[in-house]
Image 1 (cartoon, rainbow, N blue to C red):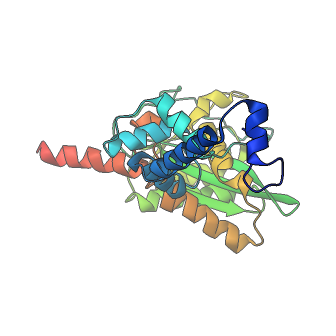
Image 2 (cartoon, rainbow, N blue to C red):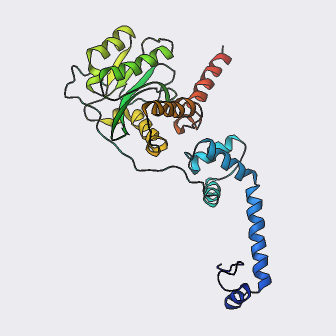
Image 3 (cartoon, rainbow, N blue to C red):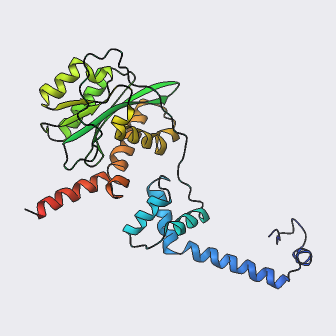
Length: 292
């Protein structure tokens, strides 16, 4: 309704005459709208939606928002959540997906067999780790990020950043993961066929020092390492594509805030039943202790 009380258009009574509504009817409608707005702003569902939207920094869509609300005792359907978010203008982050080639297998010394064979569902921690490299646009050039995930809880257990894709980039990430997890043995470490992973120094770290088993994707088949592809897509969609970093120090701090403080500890993961990787691992160990 285009009726306005501030006299910037026609007087209210003249507009009511044109629209064939009474002035009292208009004012009653306006009061109902105001009361409805106040009631919605004080509604527990609205308060919780706003709180979750702020906590997750606009990263939750309606489906994940519904799951988080259910944990807090709200029995609401997906359509109601979607409608309320639209009314409150709670829009989640979205951007176009990008992909570039970071695998250089032209200098591969010796490719390992694909032992993982797309068996991404893992029953225990420190059984299978996946690792890969991605690029990040940074001040007109690129930064490269190597990440290691424990496939059991999809948890990031090691990562490293550098301005070139040298072998030390992946060695640092893998060694960081190994130390952080208590130096476990017999882990299956899966990667693509990139020259960084097939280098002699990588083989020595993984198979000799760590006493682990190396597995590699088939040539040109990114789906053999689909969990890493999914993580990098999430990282860019929810974080990297929305920030311009003024320094490498700021970038590393922001990366820590997203991965360690948010992704591992708070972000609900659909594969894990919409709990965070940290909570999923904690539930596993608590269950294990209770059965002893």
